[in-house]
Image (cartoon, rainbow, N blue to C red; front, side, top):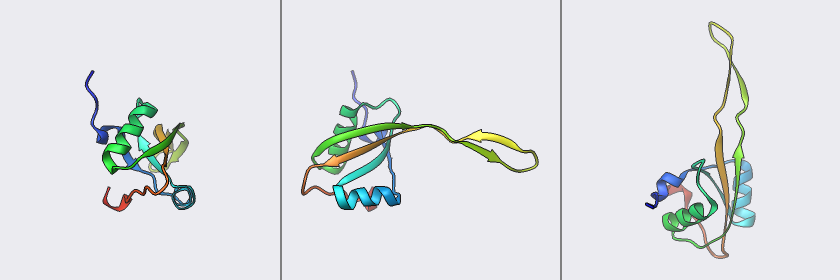
Amino acid sequence: MSRRKPYEIIIRPIITEKSNRLMDDYNKYTFEVALDASKHEIKWAVEELFKVKVKKVNTMIVKPKKKRIFGRFRRYGTTRKYKKAIVTLAPDNKIDLVNF
């Protein structure tokens, strides 16, 4: 079994008001990850990419939302489905998301 590269598992960090509050208060970081990634793979990828110690990983699949598309014809579409991981780091560990 060949192991995937960390950049194939961790797609991008999610930066929102809520994720910033989690970073500051609880040392939790939010990432968009591959849909088929397991918690063990996510933990390994974060530890490899950022050289930190991961304490816990929580995952959820964000369902697509319906959107109306206007233009010449009215159409309906959906946003895409993705998997989100909230990674709790061990105390005294930080991730610099600016250089990611």
